[in-house]
Amino acid sequence: MPVIRTLSQVVRRMLLSPACDCRTSVVPTRFLGFSPRQIPADANFHSISVTETDHPCVLITGGLGQLGVGLANFLRKRFGKDNVILSDIRKPPNHIFHSGPFIYSDILDYKNLREIVVNNRITWLFHYSALLSAVGEANVSLARDVNITGLHNVLDVATEHNLRLFVPSTIGAFGPTSPRNPTPDLCIQRPRTIYGVSKVHAELMGEYYHYRYGLDFRCLRYPGIISADSQPGGGTTDYAVQIFHDATKNGKFECNLKPNTRLPMMYIDDCLRATLEVMEAPEKSLSMRTYNINAMSFTPKELAQEVLKHVPEFQITYNVDAVRQAIADSWPMNFDDSNARKDWGWKHDFDLPELVTTMLNFHGSDTGLPKLTENIKWKSACNLDSCQGKMIKFFML
Ligand SMILES: NC(=O)c1ccc[n+]([C@@H]2O[C@H](COP(=O)([O-])OP(=O)(O)OC[C@H]3O[C@@H](n4cnc5c(N)ncnc54)[C@H](O)[C@@H]3O)[C@@H](O)[C@H]2O)c1
Image (tube, rainbow, N blue to C red; front, side, top):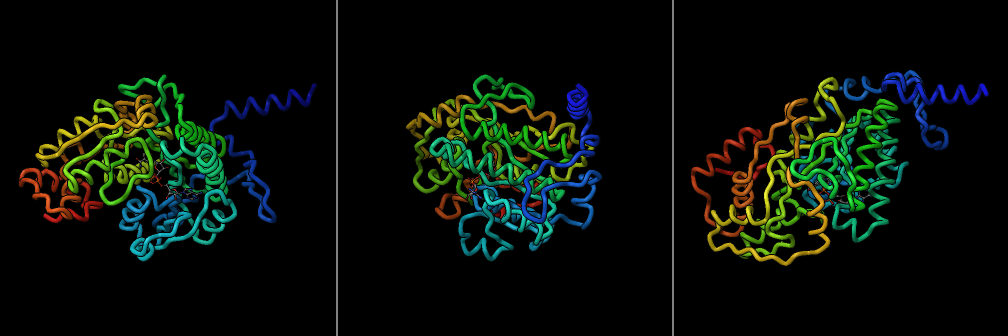
């Protein structure tokens, strides 16, 4: 049976060979008219993308959510306003529309995505479009489309056009059978939400495309991200953003998780800086393609106690949302990010006290909340310096 023997030899070679050998085959891409999604056998995936110009040309998908606008502002300071294109399927508010290039992009429309990448000579793609955990459970089929089909389009376009691709994953990529305290990079991942399932799929597909076709795929598992000037998009950690708004506006907050629900969290400045740092890390420093990153870990009760230090009349009550609580109970309590710290030098700036002072200063400036003590201001200013003042535009000492 010579044919079968040949086939098995090919498969064996594919499975055992490192990525550079795999690149001797072609990418099995979809056939679209005159421009086949095929990559020549001698394509050098790792050298073309960023070295052509001094700075990357960036596209951010799903950019009007909680994280995308901050990322665009952050990258524009580094690479220039016109080199970072924000995209989404929603209509941008005036101030975002006028702050830099914005374009319509539906990640479910492959041709639209390809046109944007080609016409703008995109070299880096940050894929932020997603339906988050709680929203995904309310609309599983849409979450499946956006989070899985959309990812396939992004992977194909990135491979075809030699892009460096960043896809965020999440603490939600773990499940009740994963070790929860701490959760290492490599362990069992059996999430029970469509969001988590789709993120594990994204991690595996990105790594597969890297090893199989040489795609420069980079992925961070974000903890819950806390931001001052953007609304959360329907995740399980949303409470940790809303609490500051309500504490400064009403002096009270109703929490939808139980008081002792411990989850890993991070301030947005740290998240954006980590994202850029992993994208800029030399390939040889990356011992893997998907990393946990972490900053702090707290419960609603601990967060409320920290808020109380600044807002003495603050009151927290609990009205538990069963769906969100079940999700939170299956997620990591602490994240082990030692590989990120070792490989590319990840180090967070914001711990719980700095996070709380920063968030209260932002929201308090509108509500007449007394300014924080000089000592706290000074500590936050140190963080401001260490972050080079990138995101805390409101923090005028
Ligand atoms: N915010 C967090 O705490 C957090 C934590 C871990 C991981 N992440 C990941 O970071 C990324 C950004 O998160 P976020 O909080 O900004 O999300 P978000 O829900 O606030 O925003 C997602 C955006 O995707 C857009 N979108 C939906 N369908 C689309 C489509 N078909 N085509 C193009 N865009 C579409 C939405 O309009 C929205 O603006 C996501 O991938 C998320 O999984 C976020």
